[in-house]
Image (cartoon, rainbow, N blue to C red; front, side):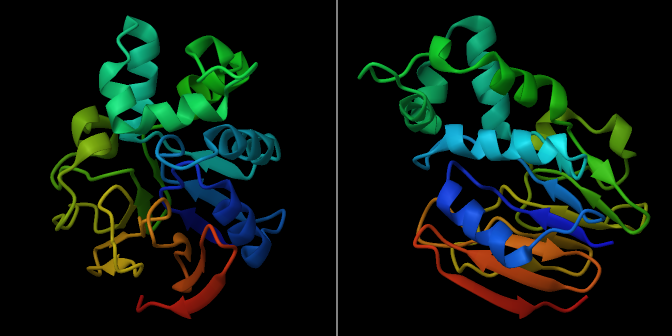
Length: 223
């Protein structure tokens, strides 16, 4: 069984399709997506469709990121301005029907259910734990503040008291190369910019990447 982590997707369905084709997940694999599925990129709707289908197989553990949190908060309070300024306009456009610019009402209830009820804030295995942004080094995962899990800071996280390696996204690596600190590995490699969408096999250190042009590459990082 492989434990596969996928970084921030941000509406990049072409990169996601190409990445999954390269990784070729097997039924026994576990896939953890690290949040930020929505905003900025052109096809949030397509990304969520694909993740819902993958979740139905029982393989996917989807985390929630700060962009999902902003989107859900905007639906709850009806205040869209902050979300739209963070990339929500592209998300709404991906759901647009009848030529409009997209509204909250265009988003299927199944997508809201996925973001609100299927996504989780963190996940852990024997040797690793997975969060979107960061974790307080001295607190168990169940006691982590949501602000830290979703927003960080995460540029140079401290080792966690558990001794487990943190796998996270959120802190964009514009180089396209994961940031490997040993005790923490960041795999947000700027899929929605000029970078790559990354999948990491946390056991072997193998990395697969794909971009919105459909290009792929593979390499290893030290584990």
